[in-house]
Length: 111
Image: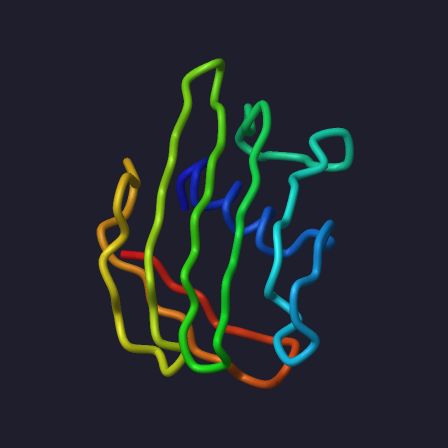
C-alpha cells in the first residue's frame, strides 16, 4: 500500500469536522490530524482533507493533500455497491470501489 493510499485511508477514518446529513455518517469534510497520525514507512502528508457528499447510494468524493509541499487533488463518484469507478488525479490508483457494509462501515478498495 502506498503512502497516498494510507493517507487517504487515514483521512477517511478520522473524525468529521462538519457533518452535513444524519442519514450518512460519512457525509461531510474530514481533516487529517497530523499530530495524531503515524506513517510506516513515512513521511505522511503535510496536510489532507476529504469531502464526501452522499445521497445514500452514491458518494462524490474530493480530496486535497500536500506531500513535502507538493499538492495532490483527487476526485471520484462511486456507487456504494462495490462497483469500481475511475479516480481522477491519483498518482497511485486508477480505480476505486466502495461497498457499504452498514451505516457506519464501508469497504474501500483501490487498484
